[in-house]
Length: 251
Image (cartoon, rainbow, N blue to C red; front, side):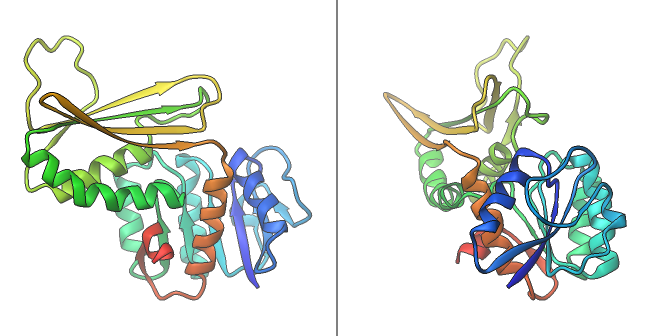
């Protein structure tokens, strides 16, 4: 049985994780943390992670960027493995995560779904071939109107995967307003759409001469991310220090 400390327990993702964990015989929510609201589930609850005195095997964080520093402090103090799902982190936070992973196990992923992580593997293989053949690369993402960061962490992860696979210095372009010039070849355009209750749509567009290839992922429920977070928690508990990602958990 894996005991999970759930940070962000009152958010949409936190509630979904708690619901799925209640039906999973291999995990239990040992405690929940959130600065506002009350969670769904019968487990100890704390408004601040620093107040948590319940033992656990792994922490799962689905909160906000401003709450991540406290999570890192807690996990460092307690030597607790961390599944970090929050996006929109600063360069300073990312640097600290890399440093802290030398002392504890951290799994950080911009997207916890199986489909997106398989898609990353597909892009690593396909992008260099298509770029060499002259295809332009654009990424569009759509999310609900409550999402705080843009572009999404998943869109950036897709772009990073493509850029790392292509032996060229590709720039990311987020806005072409006021730019009167032809599209440079060495760029990836990234566009964000916010509206309604869209869970998460991502399209990677390879636009060539007289042909277009679009690779898409559609999320129809937050449950796919919650299931991924639970899979990651099972994988990470007991692992040695290091920086892992979701593809390690799915290997």
